[in-house]
Length: 395
Image (cartoon, rainbow, N blue to C red; front, side):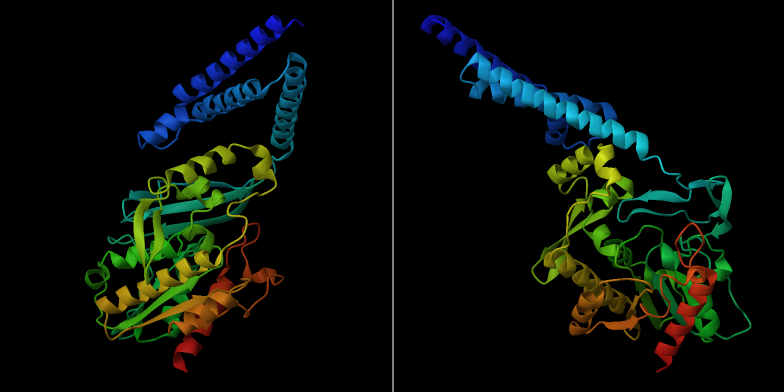
C-alpha cells in the first residue's frame, strides 16, 4: 500500500473512531438519566446502553488500529466475543426456567414508605396463597392493625402489663403461617404477663429495623410502659443492609441506604438515590440471564465493613429502643438453621448487646420445621423458637 493511501486510511480510522466515541458519549441514555438523578427503569434503556457500549468499544479499536489487516483481526475477535456472549445469554435464558412459586393475594399487601421503602398496609385483611406446579404450598390469612403491625390474636384471660415487641423479616412475621402460628403469638402464650406486638415484615433487613425504631412512634403505638424488644436476626440480613446485587434488583431499590460514619451510621437516601453509579451497574448486570442462572452476586464476599455496618445498626436500634422505653430490655435472637453467625455474635456481645442464640435448636435436615416447598419456619418451628426464647428470658 502506498504511503499516501496508508496515511489516508489511518485518518479515516481515526476520525471514525472519534466519531463512535462521540456518538456513545452524547447519546448515552443511561448516563444522561443518572446525571439527571433519575433511576433507570425501562428495559429498552438497557438495550440502548448495550449498543452504545459496543459502539464505544468499536471506537477504541479504531483509534488503536495500525493497519487494515490488524483492525480486521481485532473486529473478528470483538464480534466473536459478542457472538459468544449472545449465545451464552440465549442458552441461559432457555435452560434457566425452573418452576417458580406463584403468589397471589386478595389485595396488595405492601405500601410505599419513605422511611422504610415499603411497609405492611394498615387495617389489612387478606388471604395469601402460594402454589408450585399447581399444588398449594400454603393458603393463609394476613391481618394488620391500624399501626400497620401484623395482628397477634389477643388472650384476655391473662392480665398483661408488659410488652414484647418483635422486629425482623419474614421468619418473624410468619410468612406462610396464620396469625395463631407465628413466633410472636407463641411467645405471648408462653410469657403470660406480656402482650406481643409483631412489627416484622417480609424482606426486611437490619437497616429497616433501625429505621422503623428510629421513627420514634413506638411509644405512641405500644400502650404498656415497659417490656422487651426482640430482633430476629438472620444471616441474609447482611446482604439486605448493603443492598447486594440480588437484593437491590429483586425488591430493595427503595430501601434505606446507610453508611458508617464515625461511631454511628448515616443515612444517604435509598440504594437508588444514594449510590447511583453502583446501582446502575447492578441493574445492567441483572439483565444477564447467565449471571442470574449461576447466582452471581456482588459483592462477591462480605467485608469486615459490611459486618461492622450491621453491628452498628443493631447497636443504634437498641439505643433508640431504650430511649423510648428506658426501663425495657433489647435482645437479638439468632434465628435457627443459620450459618456463619459466630463473628456477628461475638461483635454484638463485645458491644454489650444481649444475644439469644437459637441457631442449633433444629437442623436443616429436620424437614418438619420448614414449610414444604417454601423453606420458611413451620408452625412447629415457631413454637419451638418461642419456648426457647421464653426459657432464655426466665434464666
